[in-house]
Length: 270
Image (cartoon, rainbow, N blue to C red; front, top):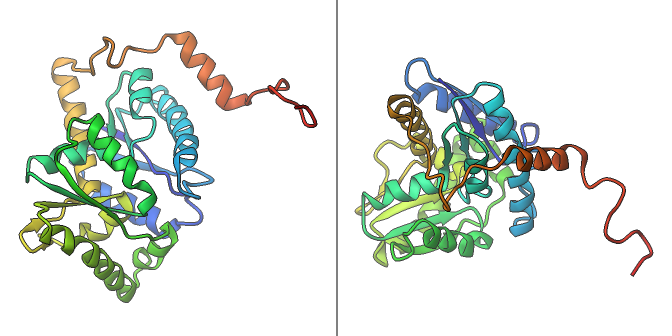
């Protein structure tokens, strides 16, 4: 089984993280499963909706190429899942959204979910995810670490003091959620998810902490096995109809060639 893992981080600027992520995923994978982690350059930065949309376009194009290259599944390794439904509509192989898979798993472990996200700018997006996935009443808390991906670089490069500081920062955000009624703590990002992945049995009070990287991988393996077993795919009715070949070709041409020489307004026009 070959799994294409689409990170929204840059391979060069976050090399230690990308190496650690690929090593970790392959270490916990089933025998015979190989995970290849691919980044985006520029990465998701200057956080907000437009950056998420830009990265989604590249992730969708990469996912279509991954199916063509013979991968068995694609994981969107970005908790916000931008482009998830669009990519599901464009390919026949399983597409796993880290956020979707993790939130549904966490909802089986407790009633109220507390999400620790990378930055407060993502709070609204996570509540919107809850609405989309039918879990809006289950997400009780969302708060940000207000960290940059580069803040994790030293942790993944082996700096134990840096790792301890980051876990402490995570604790300071998570514990008030538990005091406020959260049953499960969800690192709403693969960066913090991978950080706590080596902390076996980590809990804050009564609340277990979900390892979203592991959940996304194991979900991908399960979906590949189930598709092979009984041909299962997403609903191809109104929810996620398969995109016609022309729509896919038009999308990929736009990504490859850009808008061309006829923008709506040329420089100097009003």
